[in-house]
Length: 264
Image (cartoon, rainbow, N blue to C red; front, top):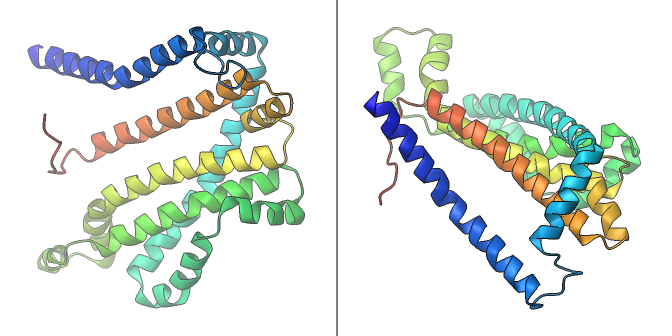
């Protein structure tokens, strides 16, 4: 019971410490706006942004568009991330696949979203397909690279253990290689989710009639900076939430890992 309370107190303090910087920024921001140190049209005070957030939330505009954006990001991540995971494991296990596919994947990985977005729009139109493909393209490579590195970074001694225990090839993969590669896989998932949100923003701002990116782009046309800040904050909050969920899952599944947790 005492241990549980100690853990809860530690997590509470940790959360409060993490909120210090955002709270300090908000206080300084509000003071700067109140004293006229910044242009309120270009950088509206936090109070105006909060009021705009409440208005958009009560009207249902924010939640309906967030639901659309989240659906796009999730579908693009599942398609691109799933393919990236499969390709990374395949190339990691096979030197022939690496020689055949890795150079092309590394070439495609360097292509920025803004460069290929117009091409995807020409190929697939302004509908959902072009947006999903663009998000999937971004989600593919972080998981591919980290899955590949995760497999290739497995300690060779584990293969000696597998031979001693007379593991089959599937047992070696499922019981030794994949668990050892899990830290890299989780890092790939976190990066892939982050890039999925970035791809979503590009897709919705270049051609869309719904979603948070569309709200930001539409507000830019009318110089509604408070609405733009609401969209940015929503993107940041949802991105942080999804990343925290993955980190929580990682901690639960990788309790066996003996690594440094930081000092101080």
